[in-house]
Image (tube, rainbow, N blue to C red; front, side):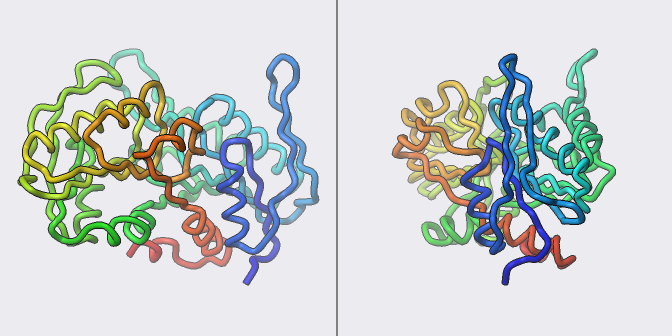
Length: 315
């Protein structure tokens, strides 16, 4: 059944994902024009009446990050000034999530800055998928729904390809909780990569904690950026005698030479979601598979609109 009195808008970051979401909701995509002046300023025009409506803006803050953040802020400001009853920012990928704390003197906490900008633009609720750091939810003083891509990976990939004899591998200590959730749902064992990072975007794998000998290994992470950590982890488990290795990551950032690294690595397959619109290079790579989170987000929006439980999607 179609939801009533809802308008869903999309910026330039996720048009295909937004189309899937409105199909699930049974409503048309809202009419909005996002353009730029000659000097690069972003302009937005809402081309339908939203007075008194619950509105949802679908926009990942992916590359080009700053452009997409400004699009999101300006669309939300336009909706607020058009008297929308509520504005929910659906941000499948939250940019600047890695800057969630001070890592050295005189450095910013940009995740908090972005959160403040979003609230100042008039957003009344935020929906995100697999935040890099869960504490970012605390940067907002408005309702925040943190969704997980776990059901999509399990239903559309993992349960079809693997069983309890597989090993779920965390590429670093920080991802153990996430990997444990996957291993628990699959009934499989767990391994951890111990690595040390010497410089930003570079990593060195030290050793593997856990038994991967003659096992199918699944590396689980929230994002793949330059793919250095992922490819080093894949080599580490293969060097320890793994039978094969694949990877599942929610956000396929895939910047720089990431696609080339994946193609040259021991990874049999890398599965990401369309939280970030896939590039032509990633779509052309035979090792990269893209799953859709459109149904997940559409159902979450439906439940939010009807004040139903969202957490039951993952229990």
